[in-house]
Amino acid sequence: MENNYLADLWNSSPIVCVVLTGLVLLLVESVRRGSGRLSYAVSLVGLASAGVLIVAVGDVAQPAFNNMIVQGPYAQFFTVIFLVTGILTILLSRGYLDRQGIHRSEYYLLVVFAISGMMLLAYAMDLIVVFLGIELMSICLYILAGFMRTRGTSMEAALKYFLLGAFATGFLLYGIALIYGSTGTTNLEQIAKSFAEHSASPMFLVGVSFLLVAFAFKVAAVPFHMWAPDVYEGAPTMVTAFMSTGVKAAGFAAFVAVFMRSFQYAGSPVNDVLAAIAAASMIIGNVTALAQVNLKRMLAYSSVAHAGYILVGLAAGNADGFMGILFYLVAYVVVNVGAFGILSLVEDSNGQKLSYDDYAGFSAQRPFLAALMSIFMFSLAGIPPFAGFFGKYYVFLAAVKADMIWLAVLGVLTSLVSVYYYLRLVILMYFREGSGDVAVRPTWAAMLSIGFAAYLVIQFGIFPSIVVDAALKVF
Amino acid sequence: MLDNYIPIFLMIAVGVLFGIIMVKLNEWLGPKRPSEEKLTTYESGMEPVRTARERFSVKFYLVAVLFILFDIEVVFLYPWAVSFKSLGWLGFVTMTVFVVILFLGFVYVWRKGALEWD
Image (cartoon, rainbow over all chains, first blue to last red; front, side, top):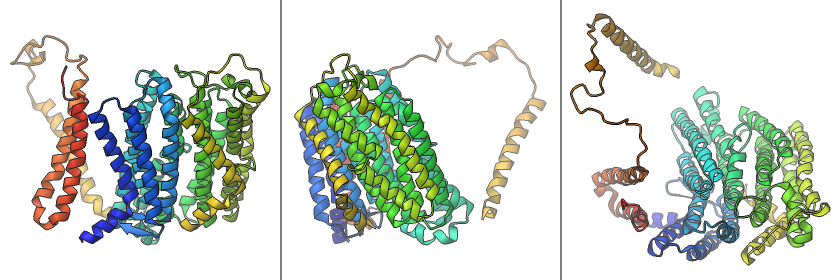
């Protein structure tokens, strides 16, 4: 028994490491109040050591804690995404928080705890653990969204996110209860085994659809996307970056884990529903993004659209689709951290300078940043030499293979629409005269992380096989 | 499958009906002698001085949240204490970890001054 427990601890050591980091941060803030810089260092070291541990543990699938969580390539893949996102976010945040006058160690604490929740989602093998992970992640984010507590928009974002998020959590729990009621288990493997006999039971199907509602809310897919634009706009920019990358990836980690392991069989009605949600997200996300003036809002609607593209892979439900999802998430996360990083550099201390027009003539003042921003926009639009292209390619390929050609066609058409609003920013930066000068004082850490993000975008665009090989190992 | 729930539905229906019937019976049978005294907030108690709908300090909220947190801790401690022997050292260690984590939260709350009232 004791030995077994130690093995479980070893298998879950990356999560334990991140949680311990959070606890140390709690202690640091208790002992030395206002120790933002120390917390910054501690959180970076903690996340980096979790990264070392995830490599050390290896990628052999091993269940732990009575099959509640499972360590393996799936968990490993997503954990690496979360840790990289977390480290880049923290590197970018410090300068931003200083400029906004909200540099407090609680920020790092909440980010670290949110990451531990996300990792729990990637490890989850049981619906209860999924619930635990989503709550751990969401509660931290509700607070982070309202981190600028003197600014009205930030408070609005926090309140909106909290109320709607709590509602979605209710759906999640109710869905879990109904599934438990009809199958007698919350374990994903056992649900999968009994799927065939329960697939016609109305109680089970209602439970599955409630889970679908909850996950669609967390990844901001239409028609559960209403919170995204307001929350993304109101929250501090780096928190928005974290929300649109880490949280979205975590939402999909749970979404894919649950729907792939338990509910996904060829020709099941679930796939049709997923396809409809994907189509609606792509259309509404992209078309609404056209009309935005504020860049954070534009990226919010673009994130709705990208949730749609990723859901295409899930709706296809074949091996290509899952591989496509993983690749897409990597490409999307890296690009969004970079793009939001640049937004956070340009934003002034009153939360202004976030509209398209503020970027007119940006290339003349900050040629390097403008070039990086263009790379990110090209990648989001899915133009070939960058990572975003291959993400879309694999996802649409999966849809074609699954005989969902209409979905692939719709995806390509809506991508064309998206080119307009992404490239509008590039055109403004390069071909328009700027009115005033933009005061950008990037820190070294910020420049380094934005540069690293851009490097990854190009690297994965030219050599997609790095990610593809890792993703293929997962399935 | 839904057959199993018929007793519950019956119970709900009986409950609703019983409630309505009792209220209506009371209305119909009971004597009515209204007086001004009966409309006051406390018929035989203190005179209310101000409205109850006032803003009160947000500190009450903080205290309530902290209370719930440690209350829940006790809720977890009780079942553990009852089955202490069968859980053995593993249970002891697990519970110690749980309490230590909560204690760290307590230290944080304390140091941040959330327990001081001014």
